[in-house]
Length: 269
Ligand SMILES: C[S@@+](CC[C@H](N)C(=O)[O-])C[C@H]1O[C@@H](n2cnc3c(N)ncnc32)[C@H](O)[C@@H]1O
Image (cartoon, protein in one colour):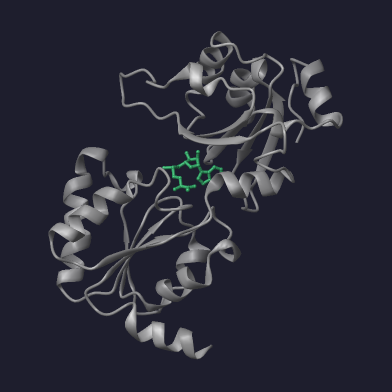
């Protein structure tokens, strides 16, 4: 450990502080060194379903682990009381880590937790993490941008509140020079495909679906935009999945050609 690290150990994680820590996409080796140190130094860790046991195993034996994922019965309407719980732990003198899958600042509701801490006078900071789109592209051996072809990278969520339709600017998203990284897009894959096609994106626009990126259970599929809905419905399982759409996902190789030629079994791993 360097002198700089030894000093920051003592100074950047005093009792009573909250760190919102990016746990990365799942593979513990994709944690930052800083995240690993903060996890090891925490006295209480609030985590959700996207954070796996191997990451939690890096915590000290004395740590208190608090599961706050949706499966714990928490709904988004409970977010406020949950935010207060984090601040309360810090006010009680804990060193608090709020572990979030990927990067806390990308579709991670980090701002609510930051504001709750600030309102309570609790010092709070963010440790960034590798977001799912980066891990998914790496697994595919693809680049999210391509010189001259994909000049823009758009992170978009396809999560809509119950009973609501997706309120997205489809014309702007249907940009053939962009790569779309669609988070929480599994359930809405059909609507995403239909809207993008209606807004003028070509049916043969390459699409990649990556489930459980970076984990041993990872699976990926390639298709065209016209087959995205059926691909998401038939190929994906229960794990978190990302849809990557755009020319940068083109695979000139056999997988993509085979996918387009076979509707019955359109997806090649
Ligand atoms: C609430 S968002 C959180 C995103 C996270 N903050 C990040 O930066 O990756 C959850 C969505 O992220 C995507 N996701 C997270 N981990 C993933 C993984 N290992 N593989 C594929 N997609 C993942 C899925 O679309 C999932 O529905």
